[in-house]
Image (cartoon, rainbow, N blue to C red):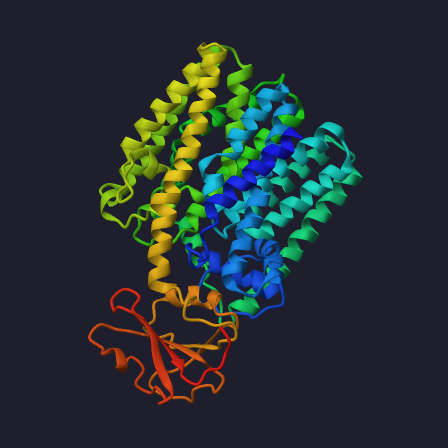
Length: 558
């Protein structure tokens, strides 16, 4: 009952945070998954040609939201509730993991609650992003692998393979998990950790499920990217075959490690050390050691692969970025808890300066590679929620300030946990809980709310649309962030039109969106506008200027 109540409280906390939202903010990412969900539910397709491919595995989870309603605002809210239901499952999974590692019920429940409240876990559940569900999947996969190795029940291994493969349906990070699990199966077959015939069956199941996901994503590509998706293959090859590319990859990998540690108040650094200790010590049970290796190798693989494939966009996020490693934050948090509660006080406390050294070294690599670009390049607070909270600066990035604050917090938390009595330990728990919740509330207010209102004001078409509207768009000169968002808001997709009349206007259109460029009179934004069309809204020229026109004799019911 306590677990159920905790899970429900986690769900409600997330739902309340996101209840006011109805417009995707991370564009094109969210829209890519949302259009995939609409497509898989049998709704209209879209055209995201030229954008990155957003995998269909997560969209499968979003498809039921489209059966509730075809109103994009309602669908989006239903998607966020789906996120909350799944993301909150982190609490019972974390509790199960800690109980397996020998922790008592009440401490395990408290630590699991804190793990579920990690800022990134709650923050990303407010968006239609894979990062809302991947932390649960990664932890669930590790638990299944542990169950298989400790009980030798083939079903657990088979389920671990299916879940690993499904993660490759969801995001490219899942392929790293597939490779790691395939390696685990190979070692298990060689070392005879389980029945070889069963391991062979697991391997085939892993391969077939992964191939099924590739086929699903190929179909999604054909439907939503008819003229091709933006490919990263050439970039990836260059990054791993040239000295400059390797320098970029390793520097950004260090930046991601830095972000992971600092964004968890240093606790993830303790978790890294805990994984190393678990792998090194022979007295740690084999199943636990294998899972620790899997977690560490998967994390490093994801960091390297995503860094190598990141385009240079002239942003601070090209040097420091946290989103792709958030799925490992709960695992490192749980590992840190086990180290602090089970290791001798001296060993546990010694992890703090080691964490500080790792964090400072990673920050130094970033600083040396980026130089003044950390202050000159474009900074977007949506990419730095926890860091902005630590520095209380939502406009600029401060590497060393955030580092020092995080390490000071870690020192206080560790001292209270290791040297204090029961009250001091409760104080450490309370401090972590307050930090997590305060960071979530602050970032929701200063980041999510701010950008949501700003983006909705500049790009959203939801107030101009009626249920059965057919929307035409003049794509040339119209900002892609505008038409990508509107592709989701239009229930029937977008139809290309030419505002200069070089090809006929489709007769069934009821709304047309055209760009508004500087120096152009409002009434001249659509030179070939028929006489029965009128302007219904306009957004000033500059970044993202556009005008919506409506056919005056439209009889579509609101």
